[in-house]
Amino acid sequence: MERRDFLVLTASGIVALPYSAALAAAEPVVLTAAATLQQLLPTKYGGPTNLLGFNGSVPGPTLRAAQNTPFTVRLDNNLAQDTAVHWHGVRLANAMDGVPGLTQSAVSPGDSFNYEFVPPDAGTYWYHSHFLSNEQVARGLMGPLVVEENTPPDVDHDIVAMFADWRLQEDGTMAEGFGNMHDMAHAGRMGNFARVFLPKIELRTGQRIRLRLINGAVDRVFPLILKGLSGKIVALDGMPFREPREWGMPVLAPAQRVDIIADVTGPVELEMDHRQGAYPLGGLEVSGSVAPRQSPIPTLPPNKVSTPGDPARTLRLVMRGGAMGGQHGGDDIWSFNDVSGMTDAPLAEVTRGETLRIQMVNDTSFPHGIHLHGHHFYELAADGTRGDFRDTTLVDPGTSRDILCLFDNPGKWMMHCHMLSHQARGMKTWVQVS
Ligand SMILES: [Cu+2]
Image 1 (cartoon, rainbow, N blue to C red):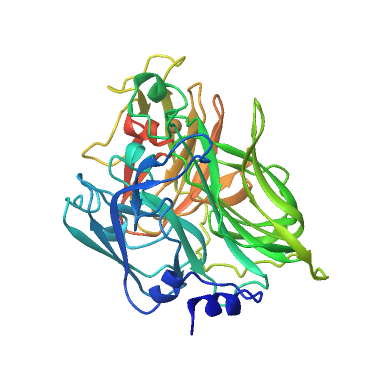
Image 2 (image 1 turned 90 degrees about the horizontal axis):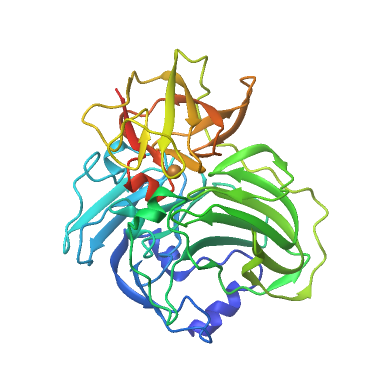
């Protein structure tokens, strides 16, 4: 059969898996990290960008794993420097978490590492470098990870929409200057060009799609405007809502995900709400129409998670530092509880099964998206009501956010700001669960 015929067959409305993903179910996936050139800018503006990619592309391939089924990825490091891969949001065994110096040794150039895990939760996740991550992720070492439900919702297309921004020079090449003090002490390294990566699919009006939004940017928060769609949010950070919710304007901190199920009402356009106006990120074209479904937007099947009880104790996590911030006791730009960077001793030693309330206090002039590895947690309302169940929470300047977490996964788990420039300059710590 000609490859062309195969594509025609899969265009009939059933979700078409990319060839590499279909292969992935049968044998271990190989992710090769290497330098690559890719056209990010429209060609009328400039040439290709020098990037680091997985399997020669940015973002890396969309990996599709089955829920509760062993998944194996071999990382081959063809970079000129160390690397490691973190599986963001996946509640996996600690040794597979991909944090050099905490859960594994960095993978040297020319070396490989096997990541083997059983993803317990279906949903939208992603993978990225956790070594010099403010630079390696900014250069492209990230990609989507989809954990498939056993019974997926009824949609015509399952579409990953990963977005990011880059700081490029006029000819399209990457601006250097990673670690520039001004960026690090402010909101981070903001790009001067942003876009969303979408598959080449032609939609019809009336079709129902699932859109998996993933913020793969290093430091930028994306407030999104979605056009041509009528639907609801069905999950945050991989975890389904009990009932779909209206979206208003989804705001995604770095690393956060939003799953939407929506009916196509016209050309789909994704824009970022920006002070200079609506900034176009990309979209999907529409041709023709089908009769829309009459059924309501479906609820995703719930993941099996244990419900935390009342917290045994409260931990405080005070963010300090940065420009326009006060003095703090850390020895770098940013600090948690007046300590900058990783320490030999954990922030907290937690007995497996213990529930903690963590008071995250943002005593700085910038927003911070705080990510806890290996666990999801409830965001708490001021009155203690349990809100969304997430792995990354956005805390605005001058505010605090309490979370409730059942620490049921043993190991050494990092907790850090996912504005990766902030993480690089001190905003990180870890928790020991045993
Ligand atoms: Cu931060």
